[in-house]
Length: 142
Image (tube, rainbow, N blue to C red; front, side):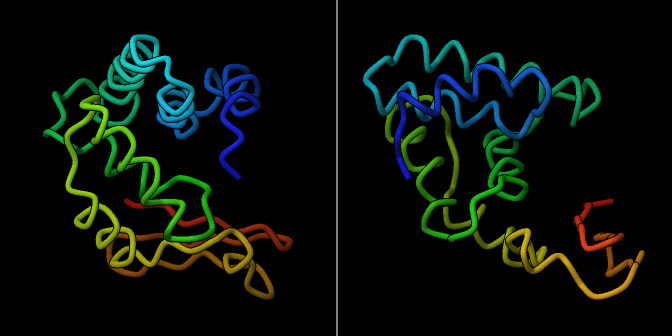
């Protein structure tokens, strides 16, 4: 909905618990014109990504933001493109937006509504696990 001031308020509380919220914070700050703070927050996201997702490995350029595009909660592909576009255009992050969106499609990442198959499941499709239990679903890259 691009209500960036409201997003900053809520995301500042959620980012400590959820890594996939962290790259949205600099997006909101950049959109509000707070570029220095946006760069600082993106650097925090990079450190967290290195520690929690890459397990100490130095990520490839664009890898953390590509990961964010793959796991972020946006339902529409247009909204998924908005975050990396803003951060790339601000010079905060280098990313091939098209490649990131394609990787999301290849992983068959879908909105949460489509991840609620009937019954309980635990399925593996190549490197992606699909899990659902009592109407709640998730997809994990393994």
